[in-house]
Length: 189
Image 1 (cartoon, rainbow, N blue to C red):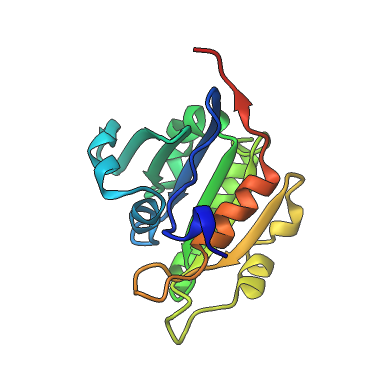
Image 2 (tube, rainbow, N blue to C red; image 1 turned 90 degrees about the vertical axis):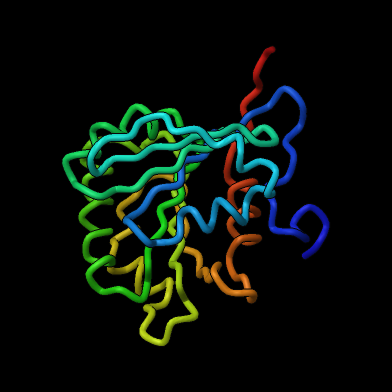
């Protein structure tokens, strides 16, 4: 690839446009690492905590026309607290540690709740099967079958990713898929 993706950063959206992006998943699934691949170092100081309580943390930022929120899904009963943030998202990225059987099982429960609570019906949904560099990782196809993503009536995809080491996989593919499947909002300033 190359071009706007050569550094793995989110591309600048046209002036007067916006994409709302939510990055969620269980603890230690790679959400913050993904965010750090999406943005450059100077943008990190723009991240602000929106909501912090026991077991619940939501941070947000605006970067190059992307309004990003990131949150840990630590407890199932907190889905309702995330709902206002999720409902406004154009794109939801759900990070899964594909090498951890317990996390995969819990991710399915969380996705079931997201569907039951109607949190993702107006978004495109991207599952990143992270930590593919680990020997015991399941493939994206195995993960999408286990999570029963075929039930979704919205655009969705499960992408292989490994973003911690120097051989970064999945970041460019995720950005390309998002741009191909999301309508950029027109905003008026």
